[in-house]
Each structure stands twice: as structure tokens, then as C-alpha cells.
Image (cartoon, rainbow over all chains, first blue to last red; front, side, top):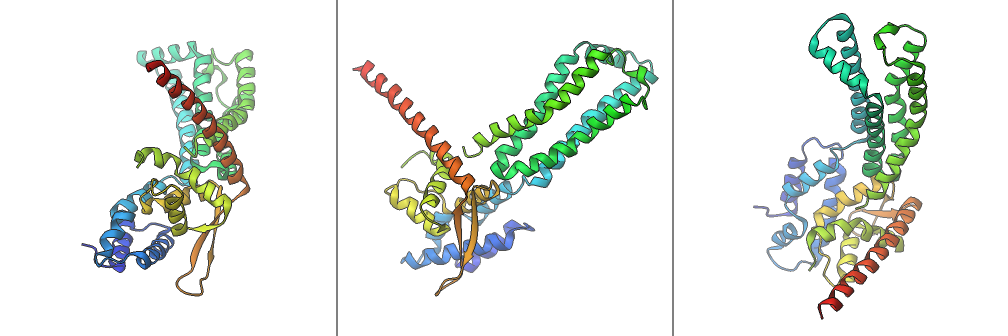
Length: 209
Length: 113
């Protein structure tokens, strides 16, 4: 049972754990409760405070949810997803070329039949990157979008350079590496940032709903 | 009283609108919202600060501390230029929504008579 403002703040502090903005959060609720106490005349004032504010557990849960998505986490999540996509592709390519496993050959054959579809799905990943940043960080996410985009692009540019300078076995990527497909890849890479930006603007639109 | 989800979805818009008129601190925002809505918009006051934090993260508001002659310092919130822009967009969208809803609901009522 919460008996006083100090009790309330102590419980809130405990519930927030090692929250990075804990001090500032507690400070704001401290001021808020003090303001409330000026107008509550009943003896059971802490009951009114809890009714109006919510329990410390409820408040801590909302704060944990609000602060679970940080710019850094979002940035590294998308960078890692892109690295995972590239690594998976690299492993599949290497296994297909080194071993003669039927299952892998089947997967490889299916995937190389639908390069346009794969490219479209991959474009959606970049649109999603922009959308999530726009939705969560609104106007404040513009710089984050640029940083995340540049970092996420590293695997793409690395693979492109390795292919252009023929540092990786060129024949491994047959039948994909025809001139038409390479040009399509370069053009698509040029479109990645505009796609990100469209996603970001869309995300910003829903940021306040 | 309104559906809690409906109020929750409109909280950011209401906060930006109030801050458009003047800088306010948390408790002042709650009281102002309560007064203007004739006690119809009663949000859980504890949810106000995470909502303000989110608007700050989105660069639609900013804050500053102000010392008081009596009592502890208060954290004031102020709308930014981006906040004003997004508020205008959302207000237009809201007006269009209300117009369409009125039109649709109005027709339905007429149809049923």
C-alpha cells in the first residue's frame, strides 16, 4: 500500500530498474504529485494520486516500452538484418558451388529463376527501414535515417566491388551475372535511398496516430 | 466519457495544439485538457510524460527547466517549427475525417427515417 509521495517515487524508481533516464523521470513525477497534492483535500490523498496517475508498475511498463526503441538499437537492427541477408546469400552460393547437395541445388535453382521478385522484396526491406525510423522518430529521425542507410549499404557496396574487380569467383554467380542483371543491380542501388525516403515520409505520417 | 483508445490516439494532437498556444509544464497540460474538454478527456496522468517524451524524440517539441519562486523547478514544453507543421497537417486530416464521417452518418440517419 502506497502511503506517501516518497513511497510512490521509491516504488517507481525500483520498477524502472537501471533505466538511463530514471532520474529525470522520477523528478517529473515528483513535481507532478506535489502539484496534485495542493488540490487534493481528502485524507486518502495517495489513493487519489494513484487513481489519477496509475500505479508505479503501470507507469514503469509504459516507460520501458517507450524507451525500448532507441536510435542505436534501430540502426544496428537494420544494419545486422542486411548483413544477415548478404551472409545467407554468400553461404548459399558457396555451399552450392563447393558441395553437390540436392536440396541446396533445388533452392538455388528456384531462387535464380525469380531474380526480379527477390529484388522487389529486397526493396521492401529498404522501404521498411525508412518507414520504421519515420514512425518512431518522426522529424527527429532524419539524421538517423542517413546514418543507418550508409552503414547498411556497406555489404552492398562491398559485394559490388568484389564482383566488379573479380575478386570473388565470377563463375559462382552464374547464371545471375549477365550484363542485364548487373545493370539492374546498379540502377536498383541508386534507387535505394529514394525508396528509404518514401518509407520514411510514410512512417512520419503515421507517427502521431 | 469517450472510449479510452479514441482519446489515446488523439493525445499527441491535443498536446501539440495546447503547446501551440503557449509553453506549458506537465501538470498544466493535464489541467488545461481537462478544463477545455469539460472533464471528458481524462487521460491517466502518468501516461502524459511518456507521450511528451515521444514527441520530444520526434523533434516536434522541446523542453527547458524553469525555476519557480516557490517550490521545485518545472519542466516546460515548447512546440518546434516541425511540430507546428505536423500539427497543421494532422488538423487538416482530422477536419476532412470529421466532414466525411458527418456526411456518412448524416446520410445513414436520413436513410433510416
